Image (cartoon, rainbow, N blue to C red; front, side):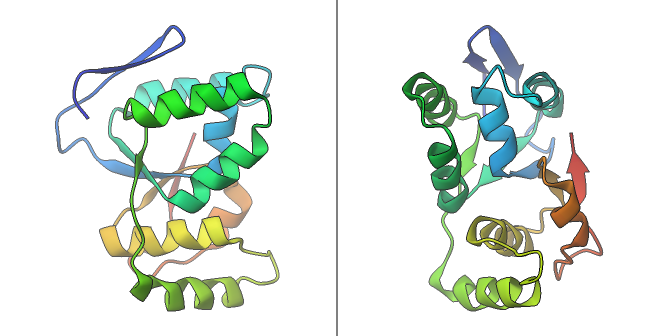
Length: 153
């Protein structure tokens, strides 16, 4: 990402290209779009401080739009995506068996499709950081490429 992402009075300066990458889960997207959300300020501050590239999947975006039924909050999310606040990465069909295995392994949580998509993406791209409010689950998930995820905020 180059330049600045302006979001309702908030801005984010990008850092050097090697500043890092992190996965972005549903919770922070919803919290940043909803100023009445209890995690709003914490997520906005973490987004500002991160400075790297946030990566997500279509499944996460679908979940976030579903949880934002008010149109002006959806417009915020649209603007956030379009302006590069988060990059949507496609999953390959070859990753579906891994996602299925993950959902089966963590069925007692249960792991949802969006989380499985993030873990599969993390494994493919060797991403170890996750921007999530779902600490409980992401502390339990054990991806193939690392012993654990580094979670923020």
